[in-house]
Length: 430
Image (cartoon, rainbow, N blue to C red; front, side, top):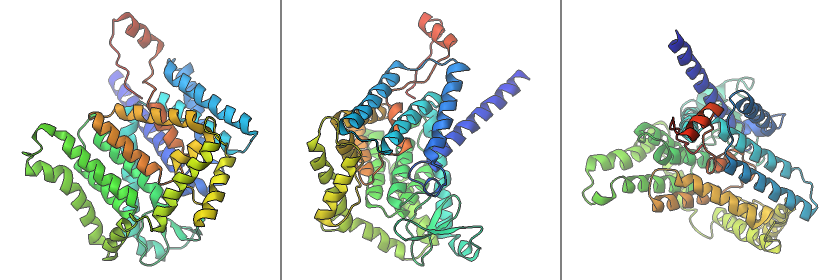
């Protein structure tokens, strides 16, 4: 009877953890459910994180990792210093502080291995929903009334349909996959994080079906950074599996881990769509041209942020610095889309805050499977994808940061046993 009760408790705990990760993804700053909500969903996540933190401290009596707490305190102080030096009380600062608290709190509740597994499964669910909605069910969805699947225009006046767990463009022949995100370029960031976790973070071996579904969905975003990143990640995974015998690599293993996921993913979409898919993929790679508008905007964003950052290199120009970046971009290339996360952090908060941000990110990557070269490549591709979008207000990224320094919590009793040496408790990065 006790074993049955314990089993139910584990199942409930697992469900709640999955639900929390789902909320973090579904209502983060970059999704339509968040953008179209009447409430600031970031504050809903904050309340949830705060309640969980109190529960862990008071009921579970966990001991917070000092390094994680120090990192939170320093980053908090740096934001406050930026506010004071720039005499700026823009609301964006409060959102950053809330994001830091959310990241800190949830890493106490979720260990890294648990988080990565839940994250992968949530993204798989959203991937399947978006593929089905866009490439199979779209004709049916178009026939159903707006009361069931609401219609609206996004900020770019693009007509969209709310298919609940996916959003599709209400235009014939348009096959870019938005998922639940404000644009496909953002969707690929979240998908590639799931691919990174599947290939390099989870304790088990990567599952072919998971890699295939994630890769197929990334391809349907037709995002150049997204597709390139997915290909690089899969290639790195293959080459690091048995680096001593690369020349003698078995064909079956090669097909299993490299060609099979990619070909299966492409074939899946080709079967249920039309020839325009190939044209869209080729068009994605044609963006790798400095004369292409998309490429020029991203390069301009990086350069312009650096120009603004140099004015106040240590503590940044504050949120108002983002407006300076927009003005410079408008005067130079007639565009105001700041698409660089690292650049925006530099121009806004300066080199100290931005350095801590990236050091924590690299610390997380070092806990993954693979050698130093693998860690450097993963770090590089993450910088590549997050600097194709502006994500400085994204709750998930701050959550990932704190996984780089925080460890799984212990109860008072476990800590005492651990310190006395009577019981070995390993602290996984979490």
